[in-house]
Image (cartoon, rainbow over all chains, first blue to last red; front, side):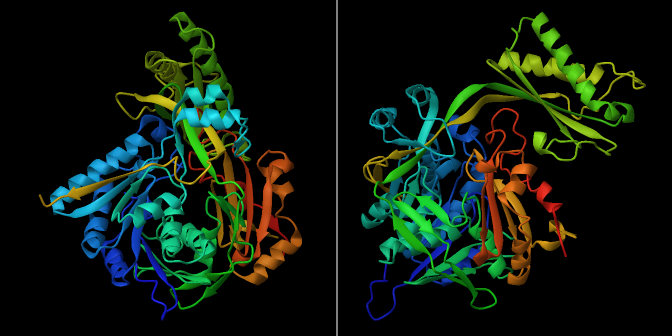
Amino acid sequence: MNTRDNTKPKEARLLAVTSILGYGFPELALKIGMEADPHMIGADAGSTDPGPYYLGAGKAFCSRLSIKRDTRLMLLAAVPRGIPVLISTCGGAGGEPHLQFMAELVREIAREEKLDFKLALIHAEQDPAFLKKQLAAGKVKSASRRPPLTVEQIDGATRIVGLMGPEPFERALENGAQVILAGRATDPSIWAAGVARAGLPPEMGWYAGKMLECGAEPAAPKRDGCLLARVYQDYIDLEPTNPEQSCTRLSVANFALHENPSAIHHYEPGGMLDTSACSFEQLTDRVVRVRGMKWVPSAVYTVKMEGVKHVGYRAIAMCATRDPVLIKGIDDYLVRVRAIVDEKTRNFGVPEGGYQLAIRCYGLNGVMGEREPVKTTSAHELSFILEVLAPTQEVANAVVAISRTTILHADFPGRLCKEGNMGIPFSPADVEMGASYEFSVYHIVDAEDPYHLFPIEYADVKGRT
Amino acid sequence: MTRIKDLASVCKSKNAGPFDLTIDVIFGSDELFERVAATGILSAALFAKLYNVDESEVLFMPYPPARAFKATLPRLIPAGAFGDSDVYGAQQHGPILEVEIPD
């Protein structure tokens, strides 16, 4: 980085290429961003938002094709110019299979494009023994009102990842890594690392990271694009590089509230970002300047842990009714369907309580469930998704099949549609969903230091030979 | 009376982690934000009532720099667990749209 030149104010230029690696961005937006000569480019590749399945199953929630496209463009833009490329929460969930998936993909691109670079892989999957040690020492806290962590939860988890802070990225950069692929990290960490490397204060790095973690989301109108942050000692200038977009006070303020419980306190490894005194200034018609953020270091360096447990197997089926008599009496009908399913499943050997059935009724309360304030429907059609969870796939498939048959054919008062109550859109009607997971570990652990939970491995990738 | 859906520039919901939902309402000018704030209608008590949780479980705060109000409250079902119908929590803002603010 060339920011240590004392004749100029320190500046870090950071380019976030996309909101999630694999979501895509226009090539023009990347080209314009690269013209600003960024000190690093990067993308966060994941989140807990797509739910527990991906961490449990070791799979990415974006496709390999779309991830490869985005990654190829990043490597081609940055590697020949010696600009570091940082990708965090690889494969969407940041476990070991996710990291290896990205490492293999990056090596494939290097061969195809004949690129040479020093690669760093930063691992985030956690050793249960360390968690048990910290638990025994009273060094684990619950997040989001979770019950206290137990040894059984640690042992019962399919996979546990820790959310790394910026320090492992800083170390990999210090050691000359040009492409850094990491497991689970807090979303702003790669950017906080880039700003720290430029010798700028932590509050600037964390705030820049908060803005950059979702690509051009702080810009409007909503488009795919890249976001450029110019970070200085006291303020950050945010500018989208897609010419169709602008940062406005509203678009930046909107994003400042994104996915965080508090508007003003943002807890991160090693401290808390306080945004209560932030101000947003419209610098030009496309650039917003933010200042006034503060960083409050914590006494203990903590790391959040995310883990999921396997809870069984799922199968689903979809159907819809266009019958006005059925729609009028739908609540009673669904009670009756459940009773018949209970009886028939017992008849073929499923013990009582041996499955769970959820019936989502779209057109009534399919989206909000019990929180839906509108209690009656004026819709002329209703659609249903039947979801079954059971200890084995065989039982899940059997219960969803009998549920689908029952909702299709059961009787109800005033029934005229004697051949069937539902339009079923597909043959086959039922979908096997495979293993099902739930978030189980969501706890904050005293990490002792920022590095040892996140080992770094280096390799010289030689795509030219 | 004017409904939030006709006053706000943004009204949205999203997960704040797998166990919490966060709802943001943003207004387009300081004047509008101040006017809504002065009514006291957007409050922890309102969110508790509309989302059927105890008021003590609602973290509510105005955020003047963004002309925004933010409320964070527990999800009924953790994201992606059996029976969940909104894994991202992105469509739970509806009840707020209908809230009426005196003119």
